[in-house]
Image 1 (cartoon, rainbow, N blue to C red):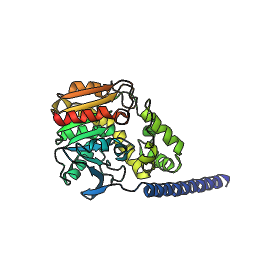
Image 2 (cartoon, rainbow, N blue to C red):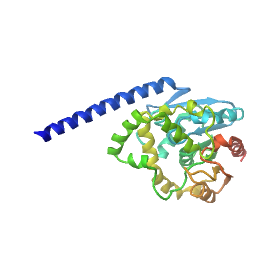
Image 3 (cartoon, rainbow, N blue to C red):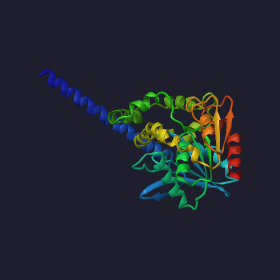
Image 4 (spheres, rainbow, N blue to C red):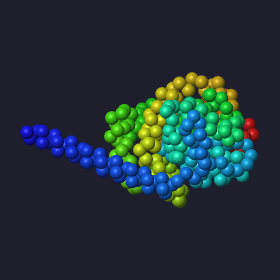
Amino acid sequence: MISKRLAASFLIAVAALAGVTHWRASAREAAAEAAYPPSGSFVTVDGKRLHYEMKGQGPDLVMLHGASGSLRDLTFALRDQLADRFRVTVVDRPGLGHSDALDETSLLAQARFIKAAVAQLGVTDPIVLGQSYGGAVALAWALDGGPRALVLVGSPSMPWPGKLDPWYRLTDNPVGRALAIPLASALVPDSYVRSAIAAVFAPDPVPKGYEDFLGTALTLRRETLAANVAQVNALRAELVTMEQHYPSLTLPVELIHGTADTIVPLDIHSAPLSHLLPDATITVIPGAGHMPHHSHPSLVIAATLRAALR
């Protein structure tokens, strides 16, 4: 009898926790979407919407953000510094920001979706700038055909030794995702988010106003967390396959990477990639971390201008 009562009490407690978690996560999601509504427009491909902003005139430049982010990372400062020389299209990658998630989360599926979406806007032969994970999508796009040049900023491109951090390992299975994602969405405090952003920028400082502009609350929505972990957990295996085909890429590629990047280390990714690509130029930034498009924007702009001329 006692064991049955304990079991019943446990189930009631679990149900109560699940209910509170759902309520709090839903409330935070509603607040995030109210505070950071879509800033651009939408284009639809096969029933899925892509959120984008387009600004400027000139050769087409498509910009792809990294993991756990949105187009707001690129519109914070860099986009406007390029819009006087390019027609810049910045997108929310599928499942992040305000873009719909795809049924397939692979790099190639994302690249084809974005390619088809921007083609509806008249963008058919762009330079593609990818930051961090966005650079891996740009590489998949190039392997599939389309871009005239790539600019890869602190981007993963090669299989890496070791494992992903504990969050991604925890969410690399259905049970882990079912437990961890709702709890993270409901309970992660702002202080943790600030420390995580600082770690991504380190050793460079976080630009003033960046945290408020970025809208990290959007990233903590349950569907966004789920899309992000699915993409990141699949990344290494995809790069194993892609690595074999890099020597076939004859388009111009500009690589920009900081020596102090501990998120995507230079010696594992851009340095070896530069030797595999037939037409690559690498800019190594001494002491820079994972976000050189914020800490050293002039070097990223210069690389983009070179890509347009090559």
